[in-house]
Image 1 (cartoon, rainbow, N blue to C red):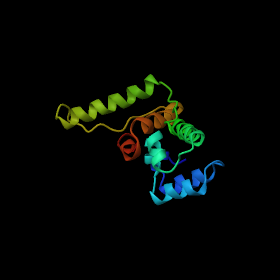
Image 2 (cartoon, one colour):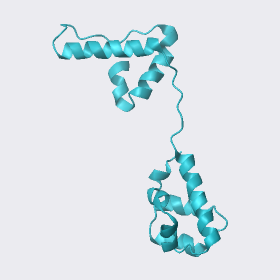
Image 3 (cartoon, rainbow, N blue to C red):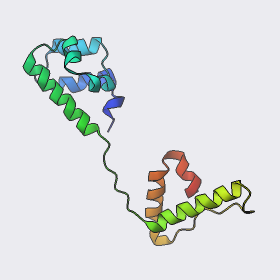
Image 4 (spheres, helix red, strand yellow):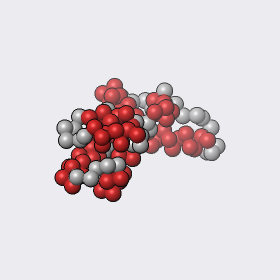
Length: 140
């Protein structure tokens, strides 16, 4: 699912064409002005009027539809279990890495050794708090 903030003007036009009450003229105005998703979310009453939405009922209907889009696009809640075991492993490893980097200990610490039953949870927690390539610093 692509965030509305990432929508191109073509995505906006496609969304608009899916709404019954929007005329082709209004859709054309949005297309000519290349209104992208981030701009769509920023439009208020005046902005919509500038783009040709003059009928009051349609104006407020479209504002409501944009609001629905915005609410749907808000970040979904990601459930991450609180695991003192996993957090302890991560924090211990990062503390040891920092101590090694500062010359406080003489050995470069090994990656955390995680008990088999916790490996899935540990990986999930690490990937959540260290997204992308940064998780590899702890996992590999």
